[in-house]
Length: 188
Image (cartoon, rainbow, N blue to C red):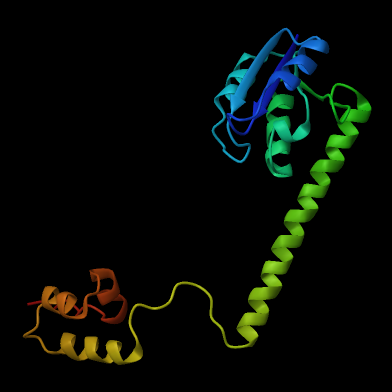
């Protein structure tokens, strides 16, 4: 059974073009969404995926109707494949039920993986260059060296309670113990 999925981004748009194309290719059941493709929660798509059974084919008018990013598209197609459901895109003439369609989608997957590796590589190179210039990544320390000295002086004075020190310096108990080691317990 061919199952159609159509999506428009706004209420100003019209589903008629997609519905007509999906009906023309023989879709017996149609699911629709009026929501941005960037949104992860698309109820119509979720219903179509739940409805689809082994041997069915999910059909869309155009690839961008199924997902905005290549990663999202590949994840959806992988989910379909795991369920034994094929995929067709009318406009791009992609059909994963044929060897040629499978090849095209594997090429898409390889390109997406290549893109992720390039992003990872650029990020790593950027962090290395920043470290070479003396920049340190991560969350900034809560306490300056001057405040650390002040904290240790307050902690050394046993008349101050930990709660008073926390309030005075406006720090958490975790931050306190990061800079002040607890006194060893004595045996009597």
